[in-house]
Image (cartoon, rainbow, N blue to C red; front, side, top):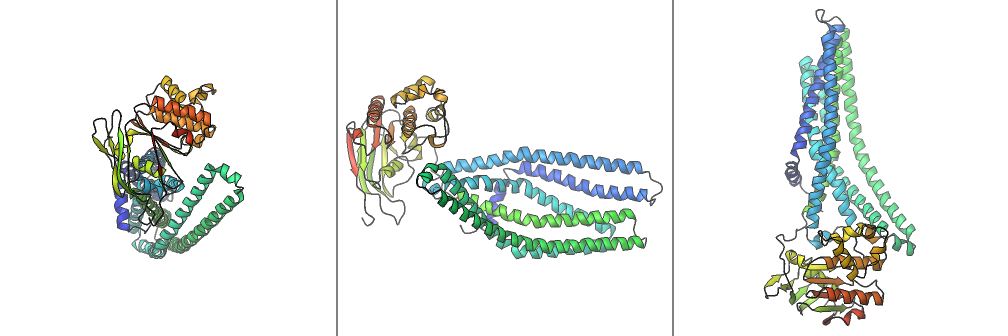
Length: 553
C-alpha cells in the first residue's frame, strides 16, 4: 500500500478518538493532576530544606513534612487510579475496536477480504488494534501531560532563575534535529517489520492447521527453514530500525548530559557564593529532571507515533475493503425456483471467463446434480448463488411460489442452506455447531437432523451433543464431520439446499442413506448437488455438466 498522508491518518484517528474520548479525557485529567503534584513536590521539598538549613527561622518543619506526606499520598493514589482506568477502560476500548473491525470484515466483500491471508488479518486485529487504541487512549493523554510538565517545570525554573532556564532548554534543538533525521525512515522500517510479522504469523497458523499434510510430505524441515528465513529477515529489519533509533537516542543523551552538567555546575557555583539556598539547588536539579524527562519522553513518542500511524494505515486498508450491500433479509417462504439468464463471470478482468452467456433453470422442488471437471465453475456457481461474487453480465433471480422475482443479493442469502466442500465444523461442541443453523432448536430437533444425515453415532459418544470437536472438526473422522455439517444445513429453514461435494468422504452405502433421507426430508426444497459421485445422480430429477472454458474463449 502507498503510505497515506499524515492528514488522512490524523483524520481517521480523530474520527476513532471521538469513540474513545471518555477514557482519553480521564487519563489526561489524572495525568495533569499528577504533573501539578510533581511540581508541588518540588516546591515543598525546597521549602522543607530551606527551613531545615535555617534559611527561614520563623517556620516549623511540621507543616512542610505534612505537605510532602499529603503530596506523596496523592501521587500514589493517582497512580493506582490511572492503572485501574487503563486496565478496565483500556481493554473495553480495545475489545470495541477489534469487534467493530471484525464485524466489518465479516460483512465485507468476499473477494476483497480473500486478498489477505487470515494470519495477516489476525495480526492486524490484534497487534494493530492494540497499538491504535493505546495511542488514542494512553499515548495522546501522555503526550499532552508531558508537554504540560515541560512547560510547567520550565516556568517554575524560569521564575527561580531565568538564565539557567534558557540554558537548559537548549537541548530542544537536539530533539528536533534527531527527530527530523529519522522519522520518515522509521515509518518505512516499521511497515517492513509489521509486514514480516504478519508473514510469520500466517506461516505459523497455516502449517499448524495443516500439520498432517506437512508430516506426510516430509517437509517439516522445509517449513522450519522457511520460518527461520522470515525470522532472520525480521531480525535484520529490527536491527536496522534499532540502529536508527540508537543514533537519535545518542544525540539526545549528549544533550541531556550537557544540560545536567551545566545545571549542577551553575547551582554549586551559586551556592558556593551564597547566591542561592540549599533548597534552591535541590529544586534546580529536580526541575531540570522535570524538563529533560519530558523532552526525553517526547523522543520516545516518535516511534510510538510511527507505530500508531503504521497500524492506522493497515487498519485503514481493511476498512477500505468494499462492504457488501446491506439491507433487511429478502426471505422467501415456501417452494422457490432459480432462474439463471445470460450469466457471464470472470474473477478478474484478465483471467479466463468461467461462464459466458450461461442460462439454466432450477424448478421449485427439483433435485439437480451439477457435474464437471475441476475448474469448470461448479463452486463458482454456488458462490454466485450465494452472492459472494457478482456476475459481469446477466444475473440470477429467485422466484417464489407466486412467480415474484427476487434478484440474488446478500439479502437473498438467507434463503440458502449450504454445505461447503471439506471439513467446515468450528471448534466447540457438536451442539454449538448445530445451533448455528437453528439457535432455538430443541434436542429432539437436533437428533432428528442428525438421524437424517446418518449421524446417529453422536448418541453413542460419551457426551452426546456436548462432545467437543477441535479445530476443523478434529476428533471426528472426515465422514463424521461431513454428516454433522449436513445435519446443520438441514436445520436451517430455507427453500434452497446446496451441497458442494458434501458426501465425498462417505462410503457408498452411507452416501446412499444420506442422499435418500435428505431428499425425502427436504421435499418442497430445491436441492442442488455439486458432485462427482454417480450414486447421487440416480436420485436427481435433472443434471447438467459444466465444461471448463479455455482462457481465449
